[in-house]
Length: 348
Image (cartoon, rainbow, N blue to C red; front, top):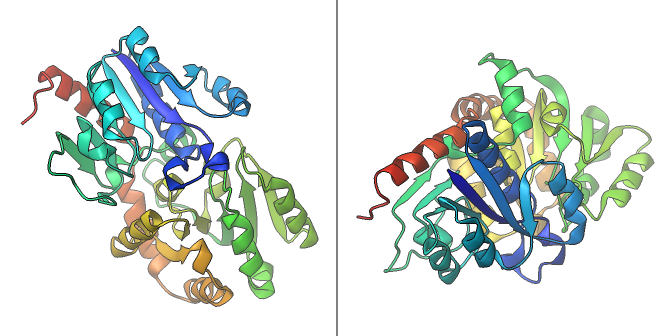
């Protein structure tokens, strides 16, 4: 089979509105599925939008890609058996143009794309935009078991071999993804009380496209070595492993952390993140601190103090998440896509 993947990388840095905000999580999801497909003997190609500085990042993946804006021309020339899109707010017209070439599989959680793709796979079923009367989607599979996690988390999970996750009490990592244009990392660090900073074994990470990395490093240096700073770590799973909890951005890393037994406190950026935070809370899969614009020192420090003071929520989240996100989503998706194609792609 020939797989074509359509995503954007680190466009969050130049976004004028929420519709253009894309970090690197979308690309990492596609990369995991592409590698699973290639391991099964298929071939994959990517058609990607992003600035020129993402080329070294893409080249390290070893996969075939085109950095361009004419994605339909690439699709026609490549002649794929399936098109996988992971672009938030990809509109109906784009989906229909791809569907004229091959069945469309959607991995993006936001916007109307999930209502017009042939198959959709997401970590939760959030209807952030109303379902239109003429929705054409055939199947929408949702739930933590369909969370596609990065290869380093898959490998770390496999090494654990189903054993109870390790826990290093007091170890905490703050990670807000590959870009963090809004500097949620810096905001949380600023709000943490000196007492908590002293009590915690704290690590701050900045992703490869984080424009605030130098400022974060300087802030950590000001704390006199009490906080470790890591810029673009090669193996984020190794950094997070064993943490009592992490402070994350309510995205893919929230579920990746669960796959290795790390519960998280989450900071959002949008109304979509608010909805995801509500799901995490209701399903005992995470703690939602709220939108970054509404964060207060009391909210951050009181929540962390409560969790460290005997609240059993972290243990419940750790146990439930570890069993819910098992790292097999890419293989499950491949299987369901093959079944769909073999059934003739008929719609009901």
